Length: 81
Image (cartoon, rainbow, N blue to C red; front, side, top):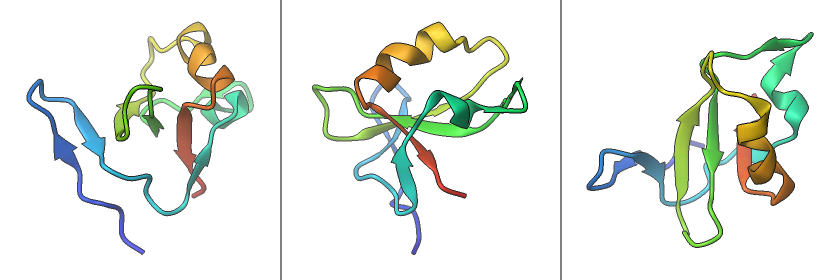
């Protein structure tokens, strides 16, 4: 099954209107392999006030403290693959 079309809002942010097939709620361990950050991996955030899924990528500067509030509130999704 294909991913939904990537959309762009008026501010240039990329998003999916629906959760792509094969994505699931994330856990902190999804962002590391053997303690090394999975730099570049795509993850999605669905904030409580929106129906769409923002597309984000794990960067060198991304810290767990930034992700934790979203993880605690079941707002981050990652691909099963």
